[in-house]
Length: 192
Image (cartoon, rainbow, N blue to C red; front, side, top):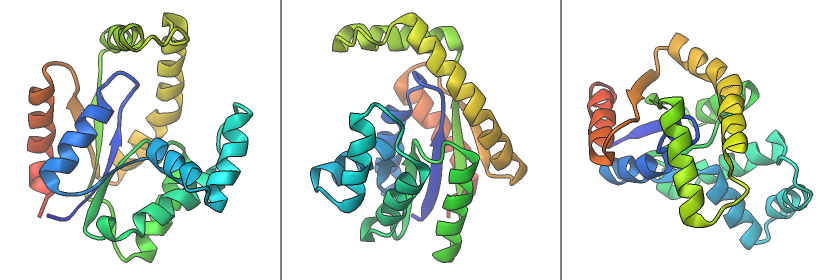
């Protein structure tokens, strides 16, 4: 089944969990920018070395490096018949870059899935995860700020994709299986 998807959603909405489940059901790779960064750094690629310098300094990896890594990953054989992008695009410029990558490949997105989450529930989920994983730096103030940044930066992306008729919003609250089923039901009319 061919599906080219972008997965949006605030921290704590369950994107990582759902990305793995959706990619398995559709038979397409789940591609996260974090995984791409780690792979390039581990393989000591030129882009990985460039990204490492920024990460070591505690700075964001510039769009030009991120875009190049994503373009390389989307060109891999396993993504030829589809993919699910998790964590990209995050900015309007990255949307334009992704548009260019897909246009060059003679294709486009099937859908953009936005997993929505109640803010208080998302905070509770992330505090629980932080406690389970011993991540003391993930305190409530930091988590709330991450949610604010997500809302500021991603709302324009969701609006852009809604204007293009690609956005599918799905409630991310509830049991994991129920959320997966809601996502698959929302995607069904778009998959061929």
